Amino acid sequence: MKMKGSEILIETLIDQGVTDIFGYPGGTVLDIYDAIYNRQDRIHHVLASHEQHACHAADGYARATGKVGVVLATSGPGSTNLVTGIATAMLDSVPIVAITGNVGRAMIGKDSFQEVDITGITLPITKHNYFVNDIDQLEEVVREAFKIAKSGRPGPVLIDIPKDVQNQIGNFQPKGLVRPFGKIAPSQNRIEEAAELINRCRRPYIYIGGGVISSGIYDEVKEFAEKIDAVIGTSLMGISAMDTDYNRFLGMEGMHGHFASSMAQNDADCLIAIGTRFSDRATGNTKKFAKRASIIHMDVDFAEINKNVQTDVGIRGDISLTLPELIDQVEERKHPEWIAHVNELKRKERALEPKATNMTPHAVMDVINDVRKSDSPVATDVGQHQMWAAQYLKFSKPRTFITSGGLGTMGFGVGAAIGAAVGTKKPTVLITGDGSFSMNMNEVIVAVENKLPLTIVVLNNGVLGMVRQWQTLFYGKRYSNTVLTGRPIDYVKLAEAYGAKGVVTLTVDAFRDAFTEAYNSGDVTIIDCRIDKDEFVLPMLPPGGAIEDMITEKGAEI
Image (cartoon, rainbow, N blue to C red; front, side, top):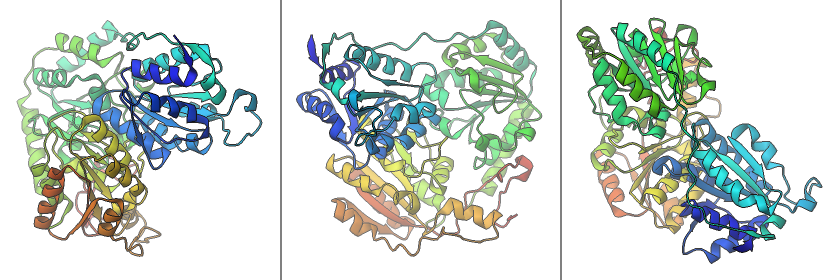
């Protein structure tokens, strides 16, 4: 059927199952917004306060639902405002399609008003991007963008559409959902080599990442661990892939990981990495990383194998194909001495944990664990609060922990929480800090406008906590521009100004009452949760450090 390019775009999005889109209008996308107006019965647009946070919302939507998130922005500053959000999605392998308008083709290259080469700018931070030069390309470009975004290692794709192409008349033919490209099968020789190493080992450790969530192989990981009698640790991005209370699960490892998880990884004689990329925050000093272990690395992205850590066996292939084949080839084993050693590490970890007393981060997370339902998404910004959430929150359902890992994007939280709430339609919790919240608090109005069930917990310590912690430990307590006490923000008045509810809590009991009421209200509430500025995230590996350098106590300053 014949229609305008802008209409072809929207009809193709609907054909791809898109029901929600996040964005902000502007001159070069007015025709697209007109098409959205005419199809608002099929596609719901969430108007953000800023394009960056619209992109984070599409990202949070994708992480929470497993669908492709979609964000729309105008040319010039609208498109460049997407850059941080696109890079955040790229570093964490999140499938989003970013759509931008541009000036008409006759104006390209003439420094026209709000013209920018957004495909050139985003080339390093997208899986692929397109400049649509012909109306006859548009429909297939959109379909291919969705195919690329969700195939293999997921990631962002950008489509830039000049304004005159949006007005051209072209053909549209519904074709239904595109399927991802075929899964990459692993090498049988590599699987045999890996099975041989695993069958010889006595201290197996499985290290999982975000790829396990993308592939949905939660049960297979458990089956594998049971068969070879292994324990499991996770990267930040792998949190929620395993039930926190699963007896073989040790939690996050790395710079701010659990003591037992990091120590067990260091003591293992066989480290089996599944869908993770060995980032520097996970490994510390790579020259000293897992030196006792043979390393097996399974990943769909060949570029990640041997990039950061040299492996003994690298298996390139879709892990949903690789792991079942490996399970079939390994022998069923028991390692009682290893399990006893890990249990002793768990005991030591419990002894190191601070008591969950009045208004400590641990106590706050315990309250959230008590009240929050298991299928409710939790989003975070970036900083100390993020690590406390990763350490102390309990998860039993996948895709319920929404956080920026690779790029570490302060300002990610409110947008991501909005996207998760829109996508799941479930009560959503945002855990943020007063520093991060200052970067995105304008998006609260979006949550209010859309009547989202969002509870925002601001761990308010009056400082940029993580940076200040580094200044305490490594910079002689020279607190340069990390103290925020000169910003006397009244979060209750701020909430009321946005049409939300606000409350200040000074005790755990007060926080419990406030959080319970907010979580069950179905409305937007900001809880100003006062904590001490000298609370630390521990354990901690110093930057470039190794396990033997781990700081486990607050007094152990170096």
